Structure formats: C-alpha cells, structure tokens
Amino acid sequence: MRSLGVLSSLLANRSFSTNKPNVLVFNRKTKIKEPLQCNKLLTWYVCGPTVYDSMHIGHASCYVKFDIIRRILENYFQLSIFQVMNITNVDDKIISKARALNMDPLQLARKYEVEFIEDIKLLNIKQPDIIARVTDFIPQVLNFIQNLFDKDLVYLTDDGSLFFDTTKYKRYGKIVRVPEVVPHTFKRSNLDFALWKATKQGEPSWDSPWGPGRPGWHIECSAIASHYFGSSIDIHSGGIDLLFPHHENEEAQCCAYHNVDDWVKHWIHTGHLHVGDNIKMSKSLMNTISVKELLNSYTANQFRTLCLLSNYKSDLEFNDSTMDVACGVLKKFDSFIANCYAHLNTNSSKHIPDITLFKKMFDVENDILINLADNFNTSKTLNLLIELINTFNKLLTVDFNFNCSNLEVIQALNIVFKTLESFGIDLTRSKIKSDAENSLVIDITVNFRAKLRQLALESKSEINKQDVLKLCDTLRDELAAANIIVKDSKKSSIWRNEN
Ligand SMILES: [Zn+2]
Image 1 (cartoon, protein in one colour):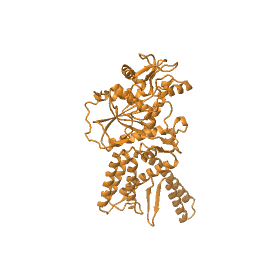
Image 2: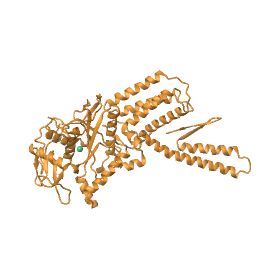
Image 3: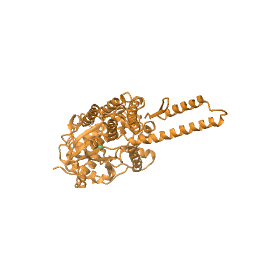
Image 4: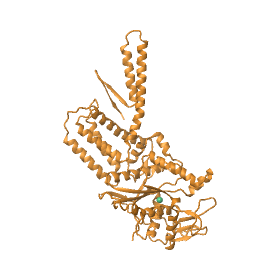
C-alpha cells in the first residue's frame, strides 16, 4: 500500500487540469526516454544547495535548466506542478567554514540561504512551492531512521553514528552500477552511508534514541520528500554529480522505508557547466564564478539563453565565445521584436494576408510543441524561431517595414514572444535596459541642442549650412551608440531601434 504525504491532504479539494501530457522524458535510471507519468498534480523534488558559500554559476545553471523544464510543462502541457526543494543548513562544510570565521554554523547557513533566494530571483527562477531546511525536519529524520532500524537495515558504529547497511538492501545499485565493495575501517562496506552523525565538540546537535548528533546528507532529502509526497514522486532532479552516491542512497533508503520497488518515476539530471578544456566549475577547483559576478558582465536573459541553446542533460560550455553566441541569439530576438513594433506603429500596409506565410507559422508552432515534448528540446525550438525570423527579415524593406500584412507580423511576434516568455526569458527586463538607453538618448539630444544653440549665439552672420549638417551627422553617430539607427533621405529621416 502506497503512503501519501501531507501534500495529498492539503490539496484534496483543489481541481486540476485533466489534460494528459504526451511528453517523453529521459530517465537516468532506465537510460531511455519514457512517457511522463503523473497524476492530476505533478510532484517534483529538487535537491537544493548546501548553504556555506555564494552560489556559483555551475549550480545556477542546474536551477535555470530545471526552471525552464518546469515552465515548459506548465505553459505548453498545462500541468499543475508542486515543487519542494531542501536547504542543507547543517553539514561538515558549513561547520568548518563557520569555525574558520568564528561564527555560529546555523547563522552562517542562514546568511547564504538568504543570498541563494536573492540569486534565484535575480536569475528569474520560479521559487519552489516549499523550501525546507533540514533542521526543521529533525523529527521526520529520526522517524525515518527508526523505521529503517526496525527493519534491521541500520547499524551503530563505535562513535555513536548510524549507517545504512547497503549489503542488506538487495536492490542497492538499481540506478547506477555501484563501485566494487572493498573492506573499510569502521563501516561494514565502503558503500554504506551515514544516516546519523554522532556529535563532536562544538557542533550543532539534536537528541536521538542513539545519542546526540545530526542528520547525514542523504537522509534529509528522503525524509523531507517523503513527508510531503509519501511513497511516490513523479520527478526527482539534481545535477549529474548527485546521481551517485546521493540519489542511489536516497532511492535505496526510501524504497526500504516505504516498502516499494520504486520511489521515483523520473530521475532527471542536468549536465556540468564547463569553463574551457572540459574543466568542470567547482569550489574544489577554485574556478567558480558567482551569480553576482556573472550579472556584472551578462544579463540573466543572456545566461538563460546559453542554457536554452543545448539540451539540459548535456554539459554546458561557459566562455566568451559561447556567451557571444547566446548574446547574439538574444539580440536577434530583441531586434525582431523591435522591428515588429516599429512596423506596427508606423505602417499602413496595403498587403493582404498571405496563406503560405500563415501555413509556415502554423508549422513552426506545431514543430515547437513536438520538440518540447521530446525531452524538452529547447535548442531546436530556438532554431525554429531563428528560421522564422530569417523568413521575415527577407521581407524587411529599406525603411524597416515588413513587406507583408500587419496580421502576419502580429502572428510572428506572438510566436516569438510566447516562446521566449514560456522559457522564462523576461522581456520586461529588456524594457529596463531600454529605459537606461532612453536616458542616454535624452542626454545626447540635450547636448546636441546646447551645441546648436551655442552655434547660433556665437554666429555673427547667417549660420553656416555645413556646420549644421556636421552637427546633425555627429548626433546620428551618437544615437547609433544608443542603438538608435537613423537613416536620412532627401526630405525626411527615419529611425529604428537596433536592439
Ligand atoms: Zn538530495
């Protein structure tokens, strides 16, 4: 009999979409793409951060990629999602850093937890429905361990710590091929893992039937996820680093706890972020870039575009040239949107709608859905958008209008807008950038007026025509720096935004 977590009672009276998704998801356990299985409400557990330092963009890329997947499932497949993430706020790394800084470990963890939440907001990542600190779940952890203890899957070591006995759980190694068993000094097997760590001097600790201590890392996710979701979860996700031993251990202890063969329906993992020559970004390699450092050089939209340009489960290269590509792609979208607005604001088109162009746009929308249903293929989706934009750009006239009807421009604009917004590209942030550029344009124009005024005041005769034209050319060049492109014809001038 499967057990239900607290979530089922909390949501018993809510109604949900009955649409059945037809989505294929790559499952790390079976190593194939499988149809997404979920009930009325998709339940999703995300392994969260150990809060002992600023988040680096290797970790951030995982959360951005999962955010993209969440938004695709909600926006394209109309799924209701309930997501829980843990915060590891007591751990060896937190304790050792707090000791070095002469700080309380739980206060240090709280500081970096606040920073983590700020960072995910800056990256436009939707907050999980519940963010759960392990220290708020000690009773659930102890109950979990007691259950495994009663099933004779746990042993006590000399120092008072408790370990999960992997040799007694016969299905250990069901997600990955685990390393060979070799003798170990204080554990029965090198694969066994700590459920409860006996307290050492100066460490945070909680009472337990086996003496004071604190939870091991793996047990916290199992206890928190089981508390909310019971004996079955639709999606469990994390970076690929967590596949072994963390997720293997979580699966083993949860299947044992709930007496089930499988605890998670879909294990999904994101690839590493590399910083050149196949080198992974990690704290231990001291090659990390924090989210704030990233945002000094690039926008959240540009970093998200980089994530969209490859499959979430592939490794991601972060360097100047891959970011140039991402920035170029985003600029192409921005320019297209700006051109569409310019066209719709100024054009009195005489064209009648062309059925061929509409058919092409219908096919693009259909292909986007097919690609997203195929394990969230965002890179192909962006290519489809770029092809659509290229088709329209061929219709662009010298005065920046499209040689087609307004209806077609509106339809293309809608497709580009809807897709980018569905992926979490925040188009209002482009507006913020535009506001900064608008100030620059005002500065340039006011300075120009001042120079022209000065010229008139100092002039003893009629103003020289060449001097005025020279000032006009200077203004045109300065406006180009603010992405305003001015084109002169004999009787008038037109402009467009180059964003
Ligand atoms: Zn976890």
